[in-house]
Amino acid sequence: MKSQSSVVIKSVIVMIAVFATIGLLRWVYLNAPRTAIDVDESLLMKVVKPGKYVGEGVYSPTPLYKNGLTTENVLVITENKTEKNISYVNELIARDSKTNETQYKGTRKGKYFYKPTHGSNLFNTSETFVDGQVVSTSYGYATAKTDNSIDFHINCAWHIIDEEYNNVSKDLKRVGDVLYGTFTHPGFFGGDALTFHEKYVQE
Image (tube, rainbow, N blue to C red; front, side, top):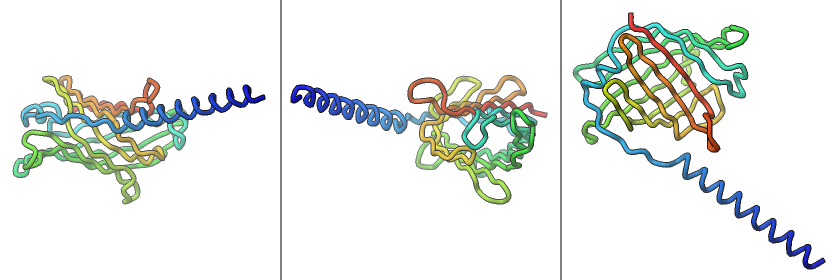
């Protein structure tokens, strides 16, 4: 009997150690810092070119919207030369991806900007309003770039899911008159926990 009890106790201790290790690794993974990079204003203007766009989006399913969402978007991007930033207003209608029933109408307002104390590091912030109330927020900074794209590491709180995300990738890419935006929160054990895919065509 003592031998069996000893085996059980050791097994419990091993399980506790395994779960504690997984929990620690998950915390490190979700809170790992990303290095901010310099982004020339010319690249920002090239990728996030001021103007009016029409677009669409596809959001992956969440507990609140089990079928996922598709969106119809009108995006207006404006340059503020005095403050050296780019602001945008995105009016959207979100519909159930299967039934096509309207779920909400929202307005996303945001800005790409530089801070006097951070050189050429590029930052991004946004808020989404539904019925005049702030329902979603995001904040982050650029961490990668190519000659036609800029990637951001952002922290988000979105109303479509009851969870904060601290490890989201926001990737912007321009191909001609088309601007692509992808938001991805990777799953801890692989795959993607949440994704948004957006496509905008400049008029």
